[in-house]
Amino acid sequence: QEVPETSITRFQEYLRINTAHPNPDYSAAVSFLNVLAKSIPNLQTRTLYLTTPQKPLLLVTLPGSNPSLPSILFNSHLDSVPAEPSKWVHHPFSAVKTDDGKIFARGAQDDKCIAIQYLEALRNIILKDPEFKPVRTLHICYVPDEEIGGLDGMAKFVESNEFKQLNVGFFLDEGQASTTNQYRVFYADRSPWNLVIKATGMPGHGSRMFDNSAMENLMKSIEVVSKFRENQFDLVKAGVLANSEVISANAVYLKAGIPSTNGNFVMNMQPSEAEAGFDVRLPPTVDPDLLKKRIADEWAPATRNLSYHIVEKGPLRDYKGRPLMTATNDSNPWWIVFKDAVEACGGELMKPEILSSTTDARYLRQLGIPTLGFSPMKNTPILLHDHNEYLKDTVFLEGIKVYESIIKSLTSFEGAGPL
Ligand SMILES: CSCC[C@H](NC=O)C(=O)O
Ligand SMILES: [Zn+2]
Ligand SMILES: [Zn+2]
Image (tube, rainbow, N blue to C red; front, top):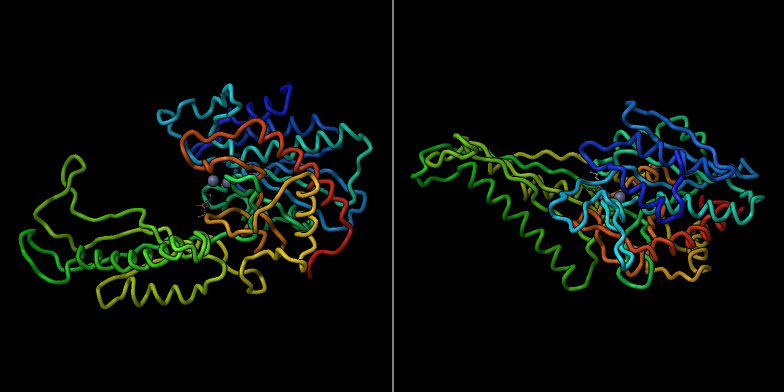
């Protein structure tokens, strides 16, 4: 395989590999990244298969001169969310670059930009100084399945012997675009719960009025959840808390009714069962037991013939029982090194935030490893998971410079991490 000519064409080429769910072409992505990494002197690569042959994980390594020091690990997930081509102005896997420099593709922001930027930064550093040898070892992992929860990806990887041997001291994962001139940085994610509330009740003729139908019970439950949601959202609207600092509870499906032909429903029967699904997100600062109690007592009380089921999608606390948050103050020397490195190349950082959604970072924070979420995109609309996702060439190129600075600083830092 030939390596395309410029950073931009390499980015476009990677974007053209369709790694969108439900059928991500992971092997094409890994083979492309492998060739790219191998085209840079001194980089070593390994492909791991932690589950099936369809779900490879690529590990790229630049060995440091002091292998006894904990290493640095950068992450980029290989997969993307689906895209509906008919809703896009340019095909989502064409990676078209328009005259004003916008590169359109699913994954342009989330998170194929960082996948290439890591390697381009290393290419620039090593080509400028062929003798460049970091003190600490730097690894990059390219993992499958982040968008669907990471169970066959990062969750498996952190459990593996290969991971333990890396002795990771600091982890850098994806962040989100910033609409201002300052980059955003994230010290925590919200944790997702899938909540299913089921109602049972009295069946009967569609014409009858009676108490305690399944539909009535479910709708009362939805009213209570909606009220809670409104109160949380009011805090956001009033500017008291950020979106990512409140508990969100959004209804994502409703399932009820007695099926008839052609996807229609029987109209003159009140069903005896009804169900609703909610995407719930918890900031690390909230007590999950309090929310569980609220769900049991108020959202789905058994006295109203309601039952519920919570699936916790990942950990809420680290191995010591602490909330999954990385310190962004003097107690965490990695934070200082990171921040200084961004500022040294002229970048500015916003106040560190909690991420509204959820990334693979939670699996590293669970192990107590200092972890930041960062994607160097500024003056850029937030288009992850949206139609017409794009990134400007100039923003992409500036991000490479930022990583050059970060890589040099992190890999030459010889101090100890937080205890
Ligand atoms: C249930 S874990 C899913 C992770 C996913 N990540 C990106 O969007 C998210 O929904 O936030
Ligand atoms: Zn992502
Ligand atoms: Zn995503």
